Image (cartoon, rainbow, N blue to C red):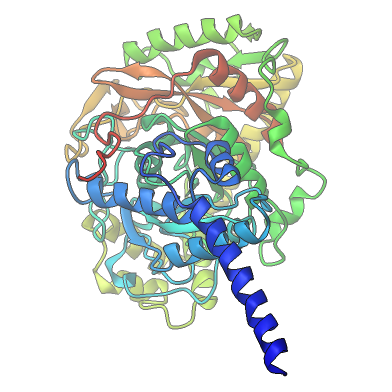
Length: 549
């Protein structure tokens, strides 16, 4: 190359990088350019387009909030690990944004996402809250994580959970992270088992999050943390790379501060997976985009069945009942037609379908086979480790001793109960021309952290069949007061959306249940309700950070 050619070459190179540097400088944030608290996906991406902020700045802002509030101050304690390459990944997206002239090229471009720590994500351990797995790094991303990354999202970190995803009312039963605290009142529980995701997204530690739901673990913490959280129909989202609880019921699900962001995240994670046979059932049922359902008038003419069978006065806090009457009036004002009461006679006599040790053993063996080198990598070794929280030891022992689910009487009976539930609901909904079913997410308010199994709410003379919760003798505790068992038993889609605050500023949720594959319908109803009420508000324990502090 001649000297003149070389000069021209380097002039072009320098010019190119000067342009890129100026573009990146334009994207660099002013200290208060974008208020990250309560920012939506649309807010953040609009700021990217205009150069008001950068992906680096958004990631850094969330990391600053985590640093200030997760292990300090209110000690929310909702994060187990952070992605050490999050800022590096943000810088790559900023360079891509500059090269594209500020054009957003993917639906989750530059959006920080927290995932529950029972989901494989490379570069971070997958622990399920178990101390024996704190140094185990999975060999690959779970498909839903890979899909988030392909959609432009950044996995910011892994959120805390009830150990082995076994928990509903709180996260007290997890050794490795300890328990998360509710940012609306840190004396109270977050709900579980996705309580870390719930508290984190409520506290604005990320834009959106992923939980998992077997018996209610997306909806329960969503209600306690004023979030919109969806349990999809089993098979809509791949479960590969998720530490299992019960493969008949397990599913991942989106959690967000708005229904819109929940729908955008759902779009990113749905789809078939050859390693998860359940996803083949979703063929022909996946919406082109779930955001098409976001219509303010979606409730007009909707026939909603009010399932009072599951929140009777015997098991429900009177404040929950009074608030739900107000919720029903709000649904009616938004255009819904209420079928009240809506009854499914079969569920009064059916017992709860169990999550059995036999099913979990088979599922764990399959998971271990795909994760060579995982410590305590058989059900027997896991039980023999005695490293789990004491509350889980008997369950691990039972799992290790169990036979195959195909011949296990409890597992077989459970499948029969679930089929009877589906038949009963299908018949009643068809006869009543019911579009969706509504009821509270919980029959009680959040419990006090640490006061485990002592907060008795009712003492019936005999067990309550099919409804309520809490265990033998008809005793209902706050920990067992979730009403999410209905959707889990059916394996149908159900969501929780904020519907008020009770007690000491504690959020409560409206649950909306649809038929299989009716995600679009119930998302539309939740959006219309959200837009007519606007109950979501940021928690007091984690206010905006003061610049310079």
